[in-house]
Image (cartoon, rainbow, N blue to C red; front, side, top):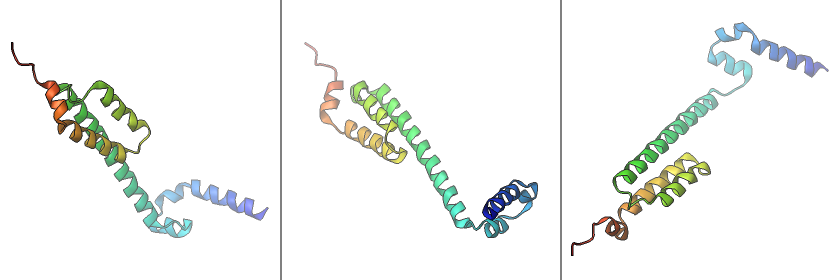
Amino acid sequence: MPQQSYAKWQTDWQKSPALATLSLRTLDVLNQIDLSDIDRRNTMDAAKANSTGEALNKIRELYQHRSHAPWLFPLSEAYLVLRAGNTLPPEEHTQLIRDYISSAQNDPARRERGRAPAGP
């Protein structure tokens, strides 16, 4: 019973408007939350946002390459590479796109497909 009343008091205290005026260090001491955890979480959120942005840039780059040289990047392959992004973390998907673009550009058989046939 005493724990429930303490929990209710703690919840009411956390909702208090006076809480907004306290410094982070005071909140750290009162709530026993390590500020380094907050910094770590903020750093992880920023890294996640950057990796997602980078993945979107690589997707745009793949579409650009495909529009300029569709014989290097067949639609069936590009679709599968992009679809893999639904299951992979952004960092791995970005690396997959990088690897796909690099291997497609360096494949001599794909480059041959793009050449016009010789005249009669």
